[in-house]
Length: 214
Ligand SMILES: Cc1cc2nc3c(=O)[nH]c(=O)nc-3n(C[C@H](O)[C@H](O)[C@H](O)COP(=O)(O)O)c2cc1C
Image (spheres, rainbow, N blue to C red):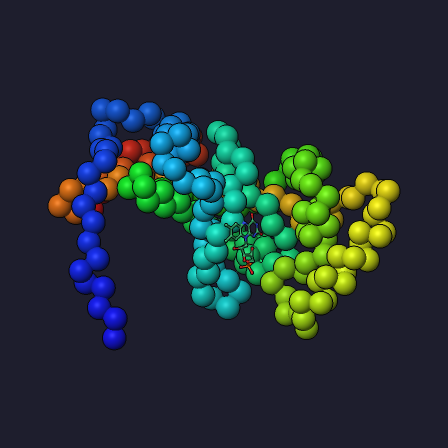
């Protein structure tokens, strides 16, 4: 049995106080995101965990890349027929989370996912390198495949087919927009007395702000 009870770290870098936060959580997310990008020395600051409730009734979490955020919410791209795509189709309630460890910060977002506007997905797909475009077409994401060769062979075939043709976005691949209903910001503090500020959406437009015990 490995005993990890001595793994211990004190969090001392920052604080999160009510007198220094905006009324809208997207503004605080924006502030934290760019502070992390500038000071966090983190390679993929936009990597986040998406949790869904699956068709089998189990929650499942996996990492995806956040590709856009604005006042509407958060957008990531994926295969709509993947396990997460089917889960969202059945139950759009999802959770996104970020752990920016060098900043001693965590953000947890509960929200409702919907397919992004197709124009947004088209524009993003178009901006990707050809190899990534073909990869999205080649991979029946989350399905069982017989071998690695299956992917390599299909990629070769598509490279030939699309040698001098534009590569269209497949309709089973695109963005999900997650509209937040609750956003919690966690800032590590000494003695395990961390700061937790939760924004909860009321009546579709007003954000109620509360402090939670750590
Ligand atoms: C750093 C990182 C970034 C990833 N980005 C994405 C992404 O943007 N979209 C995506 O569909 N999968 C991404 N993945 C793969 C997912 O974690 C996951 O394996 C895949 O989406 C299939 O998940 P599912 O079977 O639960 O639907 C990423 C994985 C890692 C580790």
